[in-house]
Image (tube, rainbow, N blue to C red):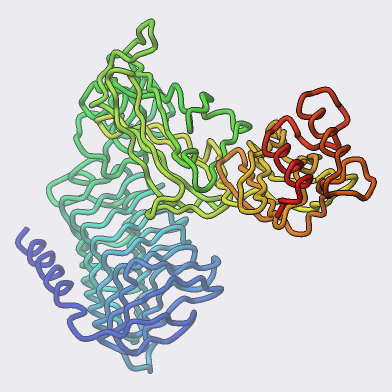
Amino acid sequence: MIKYIKYIIAGFLIMSLTGMASSVTYCPSCGETINQNIELNCSLTCPGTGLKMGTDGITIDCKGHVINGSGAGYGVHLNGKKNTTVKNCNIHNFNIGIYIQGVPYGYSGSANDNKIFDNNITNNDMGIYIYSCCCGGSRANDNVMGNNNISGNSQYGVSISHCAYGNKIFNNIINDNGNGIKIEYSNNEIINSNIVCGNAIDFNILTSGNSGVNNTCNVTYNWNDDNATGCTYACPFCKDDDNDGYGVCPACNITNGCKYNGNDCNDTNESINPGAMEINNSADDNCNGVVDDILPEIKYLSLAGGHYLSHKPEFKQTFGNNSPGNLATLYARIEFNSCPNNADGKDNCTGVNVSVKAIIADENNNSIKTINLTYNSDSGRWSASFNVNEDCIDLPEGNYKLTWTVTESYGADKSYNNIMPFAVDKTPPDIYNVSVVNNNISINISDPSGIKSARLRYVADNETSANANIPVNGDIGVNAILSCPSIFNPSTINYYITATDNVGNTITVQLEGVGCVYATCDLNGDGIIIHDYNDLMYGYKCFLGIEKNCNEIKYQEWKNMKKEYECFTNSNS
């Protein structure tokens, strides 16, 4: 036993000292010969051999990167090199994952004292292959393989052959290979504390003189741990009776060597396993030792008080610029599986068990802002508000959507992703093609969000007249015909149109070139303006309502009648 402890301690000491020399970090090429300590900063996919060890005493540290093959060649090839290290690599899909090769007679070099540890070596034909030379060449002795996962290799996990001597295999997981560990024509190999399970043959030892302790296995050929028949420990018996992908290990508290993903606390019910979600059934559905039944469901969501469910994307709210309508209000009502609703729709569960948030995302699903909703016990719902023009948001024009997430106090959550579309429209209505025909003003107004209101205002001789509302009815396009104002010929007159769309965007423009015809003092058209008694009497009749055809002048308004009198007396200025 002392010698095994010595080898293990020595192996760890060697590993701890490995790589203390400086390394170069870069991305090597497939098939490259490495002649210095390197740390990979990339993954490789290679048609043949991945990397070749070019000199003694160096380290290849993959830093978790992948060296992936195409079924041929070697992941890392150590041909007659000693005191090298391969660590932290993920090596897949080669003929041999790591090949430690002695050199034939007549060539210099040896493949001794190499360290292979902390690697994942999977889905190759052979995982690690140590090939020595019996016929006078250099041997492959005293190599150390520790803390590796060597699984799913079709022929062998670890194979040592042809007069190798004193190699150490310890603390590895060697599962689901053709042969787990195969040794032929070699002896004095030390095999300690490995888990070798689920292979066609876990230990296939064709040469005597090898030894080990504290291994875990089931199927062996010509192998016994010291003081044991077969291995010291049997593989945990993994089974998955309910086929939910989670196995159980009877009479053990670990899952090392199991093919399945963790202990299943009820292997007769596929709905109960470590990956399940808790539901209201008074059972520990996710095998965490706690019956945590309170799981939320989003029952009702609304945006801007639209009163629509999140599952109906045809409802689309639009927010504009410079109006209270920019203030979007979010509402959520949550239903708990373990808490029935009252008749008034409120929840019997308290809001402290749940958090609700909404994430604004653009059309490319880029998250822009997270909004946390607050629970209101009076209304039984969660709410929050945001403004599309806030400094911290200031959403540009475009289309957006919300992702809602409800999280209960144990960490499980329910999400509705990229739903409830809304748009931001900051463009005011377009006013165009203004013309005058038959003393009527024609105005066109359009806006894709619909027009909420529009009005015409004129200022004559610096006196503001009353506004004339333009009928719009919420339409996206309006052509309005308005009569020119019935006023005496003004010295100056300016026209303004103010329009507001349905999302609050407002514009006011001054109209240019409005060619309205305005009334003069010559009502009877005889060319006489001053001291024309007939004009004055005609105006009085209009004022009194006796005359109906009053040339569109509002003589019922005293200021217009006063103008006519000033014309008669020649005091009009």
